[in-house]
Length: 564
Image 1 (tube, one colour):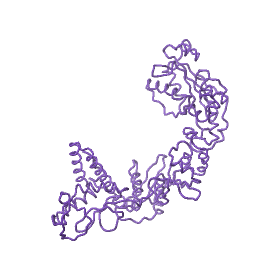
Image 2 (cartoon, one colour):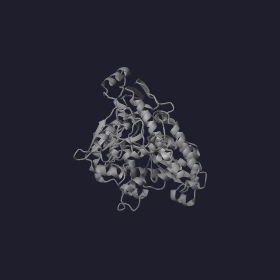
Image 3 (cartoon, helix red, strand yellow):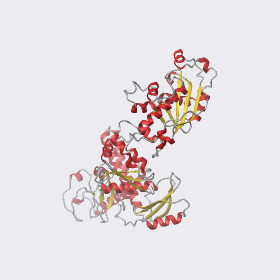
Image 4 (tube, helix red, strand yellow):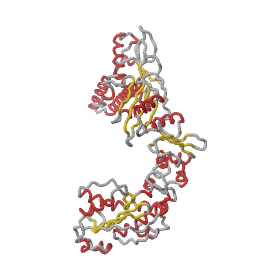
């Protein structure tokens, strides 16, 4: 094994100052192997390892060792590589050579020409020795060259052909170190070409594709003024109309990814061609960014966002307050003392849940209004035993009221009656091999359980005038959120060295004033409150202040089991 500096190249990369991991700052370990054959699965072994470690065009060191394969080297391989049985007789075995190479390559990005071959051999022998394989990122110069070297320049993408194209100072000769040195020159040559196309970071290198239109790639400058911070970004057209809203923990890095091959959605590609500007809104925390994203999507309704554009288009199941209560589907929650389940994002889900409730509780399904002593003819549902039929006097007020109380309890607290009955029906249908009908029952029950759990969780948070919570985030800082009636009222990060109690007090004092909505509606959209709930339920959350009672039913829908 030798370590020696050699000449510098790829000076063009020195001037780049980009987001992500700039290529000039990445340490690459370019590796090449010589083996006894072409397939590790056929028992072929490594006979030589050569590697060059390079960063920013400067060679940091080289690694070279012959390896005793403990098997005979085929004659044609010996002729091809020049490595004979005698040369490897005293060489270290792979059990010594591989750990030495892994130590040399530690912390770098592996590069190889036809990387699947070289990395495949190395991983195989690591497994054989029970050595944990480091989490290397890998760059394949064959794949890279196929995107930047045309057939007019080279008849193929073999290392020898590419070495001539890029005027490598080393001629490949099927010896590991020489081939690794040539691969370094090919890597730098490819980088110089795509660097002129705006590829300056490792992430962009890994996702680079010639399929990305030059016009799209040239728009990378739209991200130049965005910060490396969590927040929301808005793509706009030439008339300042918002086309798309997104969120990221790193605004600049995320927006730049739209101009590389990492963005494969055709719809978004179309959006990028229309966009003429990108606006970034920096946020204190990722949760604040997610909430702002939802609010901006609801406000602008950008055509290229598929979700969250119409939070107002929801459906509720309402248990009415009248002499003979019933269930109905409604679009709005009124201050009428009725009970509501939802919101449902689709009417179909609401209808499925409603069917599960009607299967369990035989309350009337007609929409007619009548007094305490109706005198009408019974409907078909009554004749089928699916309605208590108050319309023709078949049931008294007390009996009907008892069923309604059970129904209200299932909506607001304990869903066991619904779950048990529908599960029994599913089991019976499955035993009769009526699987399609059993599936319908399963879907209805799932819709009900999801809706009941959602309503119970949202109502619990909505009833709290204020919840203040803090959490140590991944970067070690403490984030603080003030939530009022289910709405995010303030967000911040405690500055290093600051008085935490004083900071939280100031944040609460400056937080948005929130007027409670009609229960079970939060003072925000249901989607916003659910994002807040998911954050509040993360490990490590510390509750600073809870005004009101933040509770959920012990036997609530959150613990219900769908299925027998």
